[in-house]
Length: 192
Image (cartoon, rainbow, N blue to C red; front, side, top):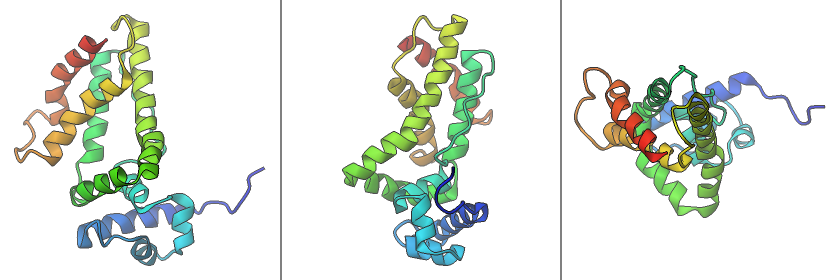
């Protein structure tokens, strides 16, 4: 038996679109739950039923939702690393995120409850999917043992985040994920 009101699919989309538009137009600080609800044409309660905070809402709207697709099984660890890097790049490469990231990270770090929730909901989900990828590599004999998932998470996320949000250079002509794949694959193997 399902309790509560059923979710209206259009609300989620309208809210995410409102967040992206407000981030572009006014920036993170002025992208309030009130402004998002008004822009999306929904009540604040509908927003808070779906997301517990502005930071969680912004993360879900511009990086990735709570629910993620499992990582692709390409048949090799190197192929899986490329696939994960492509997902990371597509999640982090947006104008809206450039507007929001510094303040979003500051909000998360400033609130221990919010930081714990992010660790559990978003980072935990990402890390769980990396465990699936690493366990497949162990089963195929590409890794002797599963490396620390947190270390692998940092190995894959860090360079993409740095390139897209700190560096000013244009990504390599062959594509960022493809260019990073070999060295990061080697780093994952070395960490096992």
